[in-house]
Length: 446
Image (cartoon, rainbow, N blue to C red; front, side):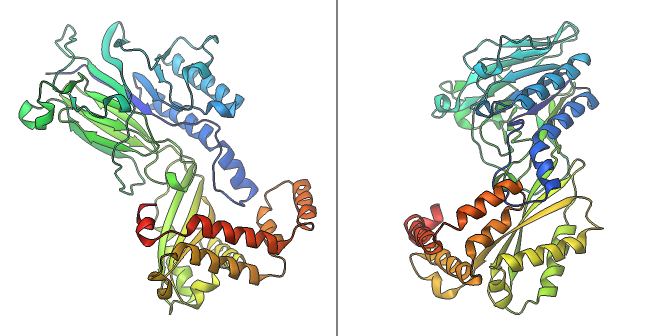
C-alpha cells in the first residue's frame, strides 16, 4: 500500500537554557559555550527543519524546564517557531514531565503554526499539507497504563487520498525501552518496513486480547537515551536528547529526521546538532607505562574521535584503570592539571574544538578486591592522599574554582580561614563509610 510522502523531525528533551551539571572549573570561553549550548542546538534544529524542507516538527516533551523560569528559553522558542511559520512548517508540541501544558502560557498568542496536544487528548488529529492529510497524530496514553498489555500494530489507519495513498499514522506514548549503546558520531540512517504480514508479528500481538493500537510510528518521550524498537510492522522511537548536559548523556545525542516515501518504508536519520560533546574515554594504565607513553595514548584516543559539524567544545572525562607509580601520582590535582595542560598543548593545532578535561581513577589494588567494602576503602585511600598532598587542602580545592567571580573567591577564602580542616575530613570520612560501605554483591546492582 503506497503512503503519502512526508518528512518530519522528531525531537525531545531540548531543555532550553537548562545548565550543564558536574562541570567543575572550566575556562571562561568554555563556560560561555556551556551556558548557551542548548539554545545554540535549538537554533541548529530550526535551521535543519528549513534545510530539509520538512512538513512538521514533533516535540515530545521537556522542551524546557518549567522550574528554571527561563526568559531566554521562551524567547528562543518564539523566534524559532516564527522562522518555521515563515516556511509553512507546522509544530506539534506534546508537554512532558518538566514542561507541563500549564507552563506553556496558553494565554500568549503563539504563532499560528503551533499546535499543543494535551496528555488527556485521545482523538486523532489530521496533519495537513495543502488541504490534504499527510499524517495523523494521536496521544495513546502513558507507559504505566500500558505496561501489562502488549501493543498490536497490525491494524492500520484507513485514511486515503485521491491517489489511494495512505496517510502515516503517528501515536505518542511515554515509554522507557532498551538503549542502543553503539558509539556513532556522524548522522545515521535506518530503514524500517511499515507493511509486513501477520506471520512476522510476535504471537502475543496476534492475539485478539492484545491492546490494539493502530499506528505506524510510535513516538516515545521518556528518558534521555536514544532508542528504537522495531514493531514489525512499524517502529517505536525516542530520539533521546538533542544536547547532553552531563557525562551520563554522552551516548547518541541528536534529533531524528523521519522520511516516508510512496513505498511502505520509513527511513530514520539521526541529525547531530549538539554544540557540546560529553566524551568518556577509557585507558588502562599498566605499572610500566611512562608519562610520555600515556600522553601519546591520550593523544591518539582524542584524535581518533570525529568532530560533529556543530561542535565547539568537548567535555572529556578520562577514566583510568590501573596501578603503579604513574597511576598513583594522578590522584593529585596538581599532576592531573599538569597532564591535562600538556595534552591540550599537544593537540591544540590538530583538534578543531576546545577541550575541558577531568579524571576518574579506578584502582586495581588486589588487596581490596576480596573485601566487602571496596568502595569505602578506595574513598578513604583517596581522601587520605589528598589530605597529605598539601598543608592547606581546602585552599587547594578553592584553586579549582577560578571560574568564579573574584568577589566570591575572596568571600570563600575568608570563610575557609575560619573552618577546621580536620573536622571536615572526619565528616567526609564518616559520610563515605555510611554511603559506600556495601557488599560486593550490592555493588553489582548500584
